[in-house]
Image (cartoon, rainbow, N blue to C red; front, side):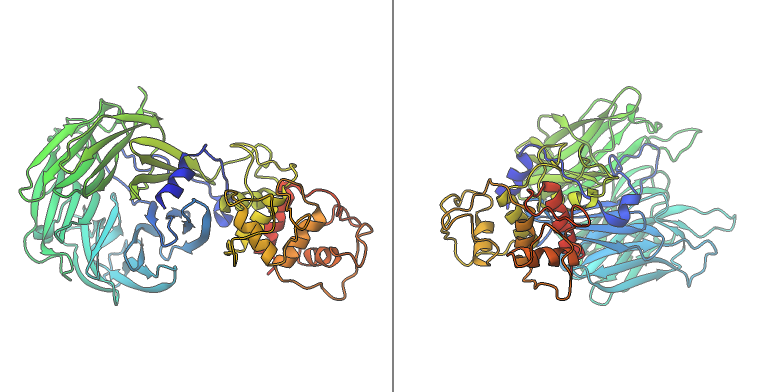
Length: 595
């Protein structure tokens, strides 16, 4: 997969676009969504993980649903679906080894213990809903309040670390704190929660504004919180007493260590700590955290913050920190494996505006850093992951999705969503074109031009049909056509099409891959690929389509199924070359409406 994925990303940046149905009317961006400057983070809305297709899956909360897109190793879209939120508040997503999990919540303003405040929903890897865990009351008036949510798993247990606004105290004040939950995956039973002020021994922290959670290589459950009050003011690591796999999180005493203290302040808003946590993970020997900090614990401005890397020894919990940048940065992101990783951040200008200048620094398993590299890229709330040795993340803006990778300390990108100058959003063909290019059925001519009036080549038509059919393997990799070779991208597609009787070539020994194709032949290819039959009892409305021709039945079928349309009420223009835009429309209607 590595070579295929890397070659796809290192190629000239492709501008591919998609319209996402219900989401098209609700454009949003996750660019720099990881960035927070005052005091509280937010639940992560963007996720990326490796899938069984040899590619990656993108999950992003957009509006009242989660968009799920599964990409193959060539970053062509294979599956796209929407999963509606079940409760009004978004908590987060976790891709486990056997199951996928969504977390939702709702407010409990009347503070009733029988009100469901958090729901953890289990899905199969094929996105079938399998069950849920419901948490009711748990001293919560608002879940995920002024914080985030992270999850980890081990031994059939799912662990959650998040935040909540608690029930009012006797004085009527509602405090914010962290919240820890254990769920048994087999039956989705909630086996333990740490949700009370009394849960100090299991990592309770008051005013915890960002939460991270991992299960380390030694089966320890380890959390990182950004705390401004109790038990101390700073970024705090908590190592739980029970090993991962346990149904309990409240048993025993948590071992805590101050990763980065935040100086006390007199007056002002003490919730402003001057820091924002960006990432937490482990190497073979160390716990690693990346964050931005002003050094004084007073500023809510990115222009006053620098990026730091904190390294804690896994055995002794002794901490070392190193400053990686000058002031004027975003909240960083962290990509980490057992052998090391990268810290990534965007720079700001003097006014505090994020510039799109990316800095990234490698570090080894002991947290020793290397040279700072730079490039043009944005971060998002999608935590970077490792895919075959490459660091990968994505940003989205409306219909546009850009994947970034770092491989051998080199940055590259590929877009899978943007607008074309010749196909605008108000164009009738917009949805069809964008649906095709994202799946690789019909490709664009350049970064900004689709080529709507360009005649489609014969190889392009066959490739589109073949990919729309799921790229079936031909029975043999031998062909009678002398003008195609195994090095051609369309080689298998043409052989399959000939075996399936879709095309016979232009002569017994030639296919003419670069030749254009008439409209009559394009719908004939589709007709044959679909194994369709001529509709009965339908009159031929076209004066330029003779009855009894080899293409007549195909044209009547395509019109009957609303795959193709005439160029007028009485003309089909069968001899005219099919354009790329027409091909895109034919394929889109064929796969979305003809069935």
